[in-house]
Structures are given as structure tokens and as C-alpha cells.
Length: 366
Image 1 (cartoon, rainbow, N blue to C red):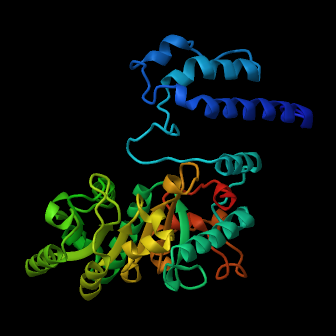
Image 2 (image 1 turned 90 degrees about the vertical axis):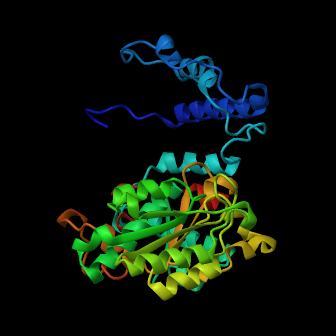
Image 3 (image 1 turned 135 degrees about the horizontal axis):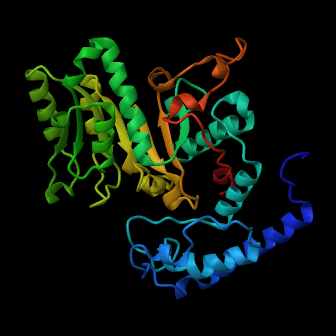
């Protein structure tokens, strides 16, 4: 490019690619030799790197040497077969080759026109995954709903809560936001608490209902029904339930069908957070754990846990995509579609918090 940086030629790209792949292959070959938990102390890296950015470039080999000697000692090795904390973050050859393709093409797909392939491939693959999970047709993009890749389950529950909040407020008036109530169990991920903080739900109206070992720490339909009844009696507005399939602390599975019946009879948005264990439900012998998903308004599972897909890739489906769009859409002049495209394309910018989004080619690679 005249006046710009000289692009890398094909031979240089191949040489660098081979070095990078060799480095990653050697890392996986030797990963069991590393201590799973990093042994460094806080601030270790400042002692190893200069105070200012370098003024001259390094060769790729010098960079890889620095990664080996300075970065790897500070890594907690999530891909090690000896890692048993938090959740499995199982990548794969297909996963990181997909990442290489995504990074190389580097398209930005916040609206259909910015990269049609990015949007349409995501729609199709999310439909494939919905079929693998045997989700109801309402969650497929061929109907009124559809799937979208969020970064994490925390983002998924937040956008679902925002859609639920605004759906209620359009009916009762925005001035009543202080009366909205959100329900979950005391085993539900803390992401629901943060989502309530962001969405403006009063902390006292976020109900973490108590569970116990008698029910394997699952949320009792009786306790939910009691809480909803009490809140209605004092003039509050039940608006959102987050049920869990595989809670973080106890792997509890909530009784979705019974909970869904309560939400439907009370006009409550029903979100299912299956981030941890939802992946297993592609197996017919485990599908029963999400029986009742047909009652849900939104459903989420994390492909970056058991699906050999690189972090971050959290799959969210909704039955009514217009609820997301009405809550999250902005339409300045530079983002408007042609009149002929407005009703025929999906703009994923309206299904998420940020505008920009990257192309995740890794899923179909699996």
C-alpha cells in the first residue's frame, strides 16, 4: 500500500504460520509438565518487561522466546488434563484453526451488510445447534425467534433481563421500574445479581430463593409460587425468573417444567441458564434435563465449555427476537438498512450490548 505499511508477502506469512503452529503444538505436547496453577507472585511481569513500549521490532522467534520465558510462567493452564477448577475450557485443533481463519479474515459483522456471510452463517449454525439440543421450533431463526452468540452467559442473562424489563415497562409504564421483581435460587450464578444492578432492578427486589440438600439444591416450585404470590399481594410486579441447569456451586438442575408453568400463569419472562451443563443435553440420554424448555422465553448454554470451542462463545436463543430488538436497537443514519432489506435481514447489533462483533468461524469447524 502506497504510503502505508508494507503487507507481509505469502512466503513470510507461511514461515510465520509454521513457527506459530509449531509453538502451539509443542505447548500442547508438553502441557502436562507445567504446574496447573501459576507459581508467580503479583506484579511479576513488571519486573521482566520494560517500562515503555519497544522502539524497534523483534523477530517472531524473539517474541515466541519471550512468551516461553516470561508469559507461560504466569499462565494457569486451563487446557491441562490436570485442571479441575471452575469449568472445563476445552479447546480443540478445530477450534483454534477456526480462530486462525476468523482472525485472518477479520470481518466485522454487527449488521448484515457489513459482512453477510458472518450473519447468515451464525444464524444457520445456531439453528443446527438448536436442532442438536432438540429445542422447540420457536427458538429457530425460521420463526419469530432465533439464536445469537454472546460472549458469556453473563451477557446472555443481561440482554434477556433487559428485554424482559422493557417488555413489562411498555405495559405498565417506565415509572414503575422500582416495582419489578426478579427471581432465582440461592445457587444461581452471581451474574444475575450484576444484571439486576445494570438493569436498574432494586437490590431488594432480586429474590434469591433458598434451596436445600433435600431437593439437590434445585429451586422449589412451591417456594417460587409463594414468593410470587406474596409480591403480587403487596403490589410488586413479578417480571423475570432465571432457572439453572447445572449451577456453579452444586450442579443443581431446577425443575423447568413446573417453574415454567408458574411463569406462564403470571406473565413472567422465563430464562434458562444452562451455561454449564446444557452441552450435555445434545446426548439423548441427558436431554430430559432440559425438559420444560418449551415454556422458556430464552435459553443459554456455553459452547466454550464442553463443545471444544474456543472461549468466548455463549449461545443464546430467544422465542421472540423483537423483544431483544426493541430493547437494544439503535438506528442512526449510518446503521440504517436499505428499505428493501429492512424486513429480510438480521442485524446482530440489535441482539447484544456492544455494536461491534467479531466473526466466530470456530463453531462450524467443530
